Length: 82
Image 1: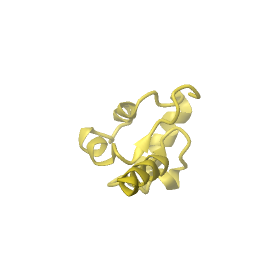
Image 2: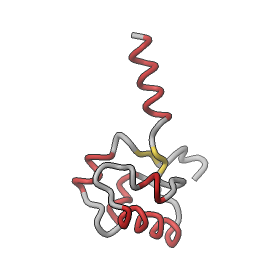
Image 3: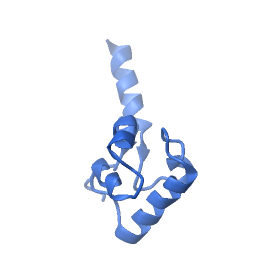
């Protein structure tokens, strides 16, 4: 049981924060091309931090399918800091 809990904590800590990630880090997400990663970073620079991971769908090319593939891999970080 402790091992499972440790793995869950590690997984949460290893998520990519879409509000602070570099283009290179964003491109490591499933089926996210370098161009789409750059578009995500550009959108963030122009519009500010993402409030929820669902906000990624506002970026052209990032659809429901991509969100479903990556939802367990990403975070917007601590909402109190955003």
